[in-house]
Image (cartoon, rainbow, N blue to C red; front, side, top):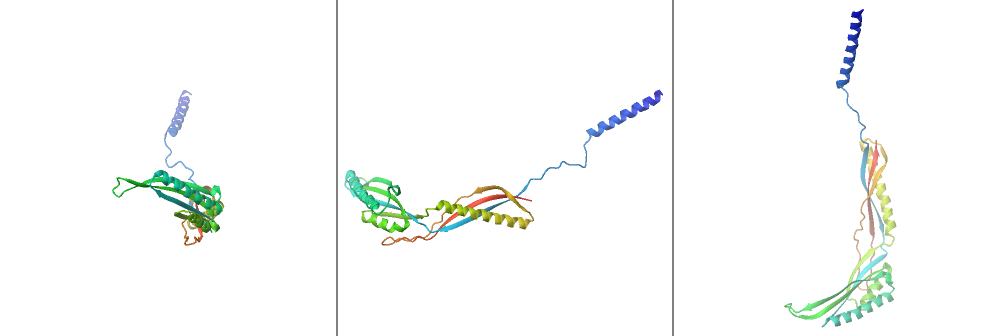
Length: 232
């Protein structure tokens, strides 16, 4: 009877030892599984719309010279006032007329040792409807402006046109993403992220000649986006 008890006790100890050994030893042939990262497709889309400019911006300079600084400034102030008055009479509103620079520069002799006079300058910037741009230029020059720069042409509803270009850029991005998905055997999913790119307004041709006719040409409003789509 005692012998049977010892045999049973020994068998129990062996079973416990075997269980402990099984826990302590590594399980060869198995590896942890991880969920793969979701597939995505990232593309850039571009869009543009064309518009005819309806506004023009000009810079007009009034420059005068005199022997003394005071005389140069006095004469320049009178000349600039005449140009400003002429611009307002031609239809330029106060909101579209801005002084951009006032300067006084000494003029020296050829050897640079003696001041022989002074040059005073006053520059104004004018924004006007393109249809009346020629009239504005003629008025400024007729009143005494001896420097003209411009025109810089733009469109008054540029914000809405840019939004239209963004819509086209988004459509372009979706077409590109779908093409990539088809080419790689994937299914295109929902949009994960969208980033707006920069906008650009290319320079276009315009002409100004005697009588100041302005050719508007066409202005292109561009937009770009970067879009990431889920894919499966």
